Image (cartoon, rainbow, N blue to C red; front, side, top):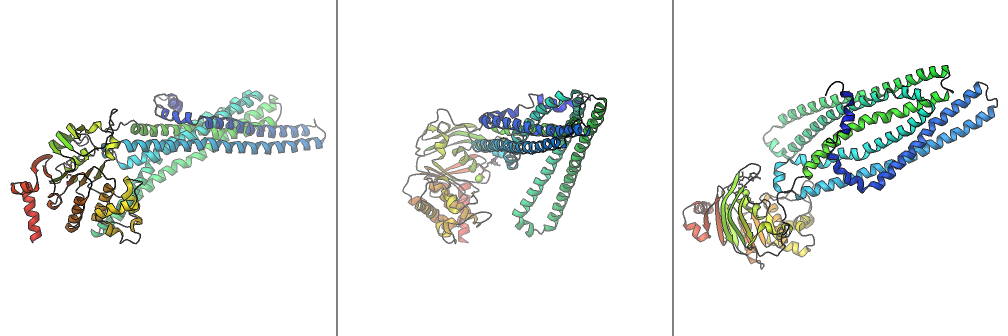
Length: 605
Ligand code: ADP
Ligand code: MG
């Protein structure tokens, strides 16, 4: 930007439509709350009118005293009584102005809180719709920032920035009209330094915002650092590196301190600068106005007093012009980031003509390939198999062979890159997503429990479950006996403020959660790995005893988990290398036989 242009930069920013494009997203909310906003505007104008009356009556009072001093009024009683009335009016106007200011905050700032709430909900809803691959591609911290920090900055635009703009515009309109009606030339001189004030505040605000961002970045680094060292405290202690982490922390805290000092330095300039510029304006009024008064261009001394009060009234709003433009700039950047998320189309789409139907659970894969979009790793190659409804399938294979990926495709967390998956002969992507997911029970490899009661964790997928239903599934998953041993039973809190479950207990609670939905397809991804073999046997026996017909797919590293399955698939490098039941696979040379031999030897030892 050229030197001549730079003072105009703030205006340029505000005018540039391209730059403010993102904030248009908020227009629907402004329309939604238009009545409150218009009300706020009217109240702002009213408040201004009362505020402007104050200097006028002070000026009038001074003029009255001047007339008495000059001897143009002789009766002191008349002066006294009119001064008394003026004082009452001034107090009244100030109180009313303050009251309307209070009302305006109640409308405009409250609207900005409404908008903040709506926007957070809008973002959160979108987060829920987005596919798994979106979460793999974006860091959790970024997602959290969108919904907290960025929304906060946008709120500053929808609330305070709007309010101060309305304030400034109405004040200017009212005050300038009045001022120029009584002394046009003096008005011009008085307001001349104000644009400089506005510009300086703008540049200062931009510098402050930049440094604030850096400070916040360091704060979040510190938070992440401490959080990680707290959750990994057992490892830190075991490796005796407390000293090293303390040093690292010191280093980070020191950098953070330095950034805060940098910020404080710029912030310290703010008020001195304002006071200095207000002072200059005051001097101009006194100097020029004084001269004009002596020349007789201004009729009474009261006008000078009024103008000094007006200048002081105008400076803060003028300063806010600079501040507001920096807020708008930040809000624009934040809204742009938010819009990027809002405009992301979920990869897993619900077909317009999708059907909702109860499924029986027959699954067929036809030449399915799958490549992870983010890493480009081909996790599945040419997978074909068929399962009848109600059958149990076992899947074994080394880590990284594609077992979890297969289950994710069945749960439609991803769509295949090539090939076709059908459920009861219907293409999976032709079935309504919600309807389909409500009929499957999926226990992911890393079982996740919320920091909530055990009851809520089990009943998570089915809100209207009865207590006996919950206990029934807990018994099938063989976790009931553990839970009733806790002091608070099913009401036991899990997570940070509660009990930590063992790996095996977690897995079994997750299984109970999946079973409660009475799914027609049950997907267990290595969900018994941390369960001891006796309990595992019991769970598998419980499954078999269930009266409902259900298709089960059990991924496992243990032969014992899969040996009763109707069909066993052996995976290697994303391909099926062996297929058959336990009987036939143990007699074939290959992975399955080796695994079987290894695991049965272990038992004998
Ligand atoms: P298994 O469950 O048999 O251990 P996975 O299905 O988890 O195997 O992984 C198969 C392959 O896909 C591996 O090479 C793994 O690195 C890769 N993979 C798994 N999950 C992802 C992911 N979310 N993004 C990219 N690559 C992945
Ligand atoms: Mg896996």
